Image (cartoon, rainbow, N blue to C red; front, side, top):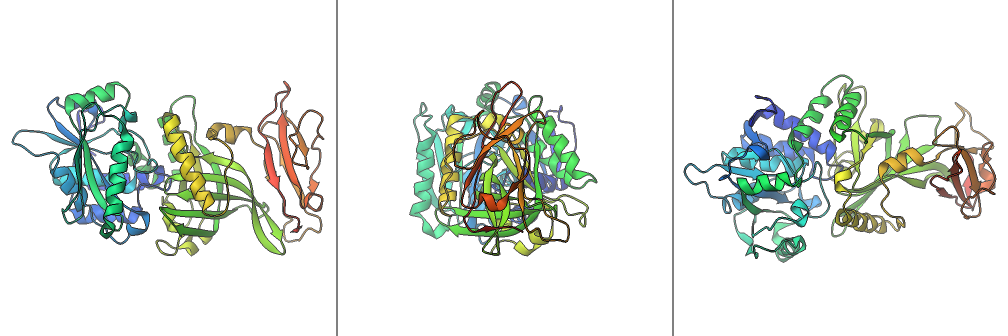
Length: 498
C-alpha cells in the first residue's frame, strides 16, 4: 500500500486487495459472500491496484454512486460474475471528460466489499474508503445512511446488461423500505437471474458525500480496517494481533471476546427464502463437555453455549444460553497450528455443497465476538431479530428473548460444565456451575422458577441423575444483593451420565 492514511489518496495493491478479502470475510460474520468467489472475482478482473479516498477529501464535483452485487447464497458458487454491478454503475455514473467518479461500498464483506473495489479499478474511479457499516448487514439493507439520504434513482441490471429495474424517486423520499421492496420484487419477477443481479443507486456529488460524512453517517476507513485484519492473518501470533486490532477499532469502553474454541461436529442447512443453517461444535478441551451452537442465515447469527450429554446413549447438545446475538459480531477463525496462520470463512463452508465439513471436524475453530455499538439501532436490531427467529424456526426452535449486548452476555453469565475424567467413564456425572465473579453467590432452582434470595445456594456439583426431566435455573447474586443474569437448562428425562 502506498501513501499513508493521512494522505488524500491511498493506493491499494493487488496483495492489499487480497488482504482485504481475508479480513472482510472475518468481519462479515458469515455474510458478504464466500471468500473463494471474491478472490476469483479479483483474479479474473485484471485489477492490480485501486486508488481510495476518504470522504472529507473528495472534490465537491465528484460523481459518486453506491454499488452492490446481489446474490442468493445458494447461487453464488454458480454465477461468478460482477458484470451486472459494473453495467449498473456505468449506467448511472457517466465518465465525462475531466469528471472524477467514485464508487461507494455499502458495507464490509468479501463480495460486497471487493466488487465496488473492482468496479473502481475497471472504471478508473476512486474507491470511497468509508462505509455505512464495518460488516455485512441483514437483507439488502437499503436503509443506507440510516434512512436519512434521499436515493433519487435505482438502476438494476442482470449479468447480461438487461434492465431489471430502473426507477426514479422523489428527492424528498428517504423511506428506504420502498427501494428495498423494489429490488426484492425485481428479483422475484426475474427467476432467470437465479438470485443474481447488480444495482447502483444513491447517486450523489462529492459535496453531498462530505455532508453525510460530517453527520456521522459513515464509518471512516472501514476498508483499511478489513485490510489490516487480513495482514494480521499472515503473521505469527495472529490471534492476538487480530484481537488487538479489533480492540483498537472499537476504542475505549468496548472489547472483543474470545468466546469458544473447538471443532465442528455437524451442520444442517435448509433452503427457503434464504439458506438457513445450524452448526454444532464441541470444545477443544477433552475434559470438558461444553460446546457451542450457531444458528445462521448469512450474517444473521446467534451463538449459544451448549452442553453435550448422552441421551439414550447418543451424544446430544443442550442449549444453555446465548453467548452473542446479532447485530454484534460473531466471527469464525481457523486456528489450527499446522497452518501457522489465520484463515477466515463463512457459514457456507460447513456444508458439503459449498465447503468441506470434514475439514472443520479436524481443524480447530475459534469463535470471536465483539460489540457493534453503532449498529444497535432499533431498526437494525429488529431486522436481526426477525431473521434470527426465522432461522431458528426452520429447525423447530424459537428465540424468546430480546437482543442482549454481547458484553452483558459475556461478563454476566454462569459457566456450566460436566467435567470428564481422563480415560475413565464416570458412573455419576455431575454438573458444575461457576459464577462470572468470584464473590458472587450462585442460587438455583430445579422447578423452572426464578432463583431468588431464598433459593438454595450452589455449593457442590449437582448429580446429573437428579436433574433428568427438570429445568435448572441458576443465577449469581453479587455482594450488594443485586442479581445477575439467569442461566436456564432444560434436561431431557432420558439423560444419562458419561
